[in-house]
Amino acid sequence: MKKLAIVVAGGPAPGINSVIGAATIRARLSGVEVIGLQDGFKWISEGDLSHVVPLTIEDTSRIHFRGGSYIGISRANPTRSPEHFQRTLEGLEKLGVGMLITIGGDGTATLAQIISEKTRGRIRVVHVPKTIDNDIDLPDDTSTFGFQTARHVGVEIVKNLMVDAKTTHRWYFVVAQGRKAGHLALSIGKAVGATNIVIPEEFQKGCPVSFNHVVDILAGSVIKRLGYGRQDGIVLLAEGLADCIDPVDLAKHTDIPRDHMGNIHVAEINLGEVLEKAVKERLAGLGIKATLITKYIGYEVRCADPIPFDMEYTRDLGYCAARYIIEGGTEAVVSMVNGRFQPISFQEMKDPSTGRPRVRLVDVDSDRYKIARSFMLRLKRQDFDKPEELARFAAAARLTPEAFREQFHHLVKDEPQVAIDVEMGLSAKVMDAAKAVDAAKAGEPTGGEAQ
Image (cartoon, rainbow, N blue to C red):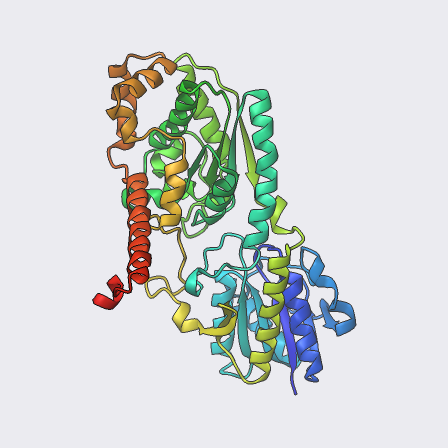
């Protein structure tokens, strides 16, 4: 039987070692030889086959407790040139690889499919999706592995910042990793009860948004908090916001790094500092002095030791990946849905418009987001409809109510009625449930039965 190779590509995520260990154990118990390609595709794409290690049960049975990657990781992409890709295929053949488990994000999933197609089935390939961004479109809102650990560690960091903020009367702008989606920022912010959370999905219908609009959202939170007698706060920002802001606007405040395709390199933009400086200037123009500090969350959480949830989850994924590929499975993404293994074909995961795996965004129409939005301390439509509230915030901004409305009312022109919607929706569900209970006690048919 040909060998099983395991490779990790992209960025780290808690739980990688659990996948490697479980897949190795399952394969070795089936009599399959397992090897690890060190540092992703970096060496094999250069034609160097010396960076390959045998994986055994003895070596990997306890690596699941730790973060990082036992066999290293890299973002090297063999498809960057025909020569590199050909060396990769030739290297796999020379090593006697007939099965390949890739662990990575959407780019690695695309590469896995290309390898399978180019080898015409000689190498079976399955992909285990990982990202702390949680933006791979898995069924039933299933988390990508590493996300829950990243949130857990991120919450611990922000909890401490919240105490510091209150103690020292300052604001923290916390930028959480998330190139395209705001899952991490939203989930950390909701858990800690952040003062405000700003994610790119809220601007889906108005993208690109002006830089000054985002600045006023943040300045508005500071002013509203001052109106209630507080000089501190925590804002969670998704790094993908940089991709939502009008690039012409953004270029006035910072350099915009782009790749060879012209796409903005979101991770290389110091979004927190850019917004911090602009908000300070906006507030200073109103005579308000505020202490604002930027903090980034990303590198601190992606190599953390996995929490028990991710340890168990990723061991399941590794086991299923090995079993599926050994039994003849190929060209599938490995997922666990409601406790059951569910392979998803590469084709099913594709977005027809891009040819890449679909991106899962935060559903801003969900109750989950609406509840978060209702708790956020930001300027809302009702603040302008109630004269006493308008006067309170205008005084904090050292403006007349009329001037305050003129400067900040633009923030609420297209505001969704999220708080009202969620309260009405939940109330209706509570009423329906109560009616059903009353009907059952009276021996009457429930609403569902009557229909």
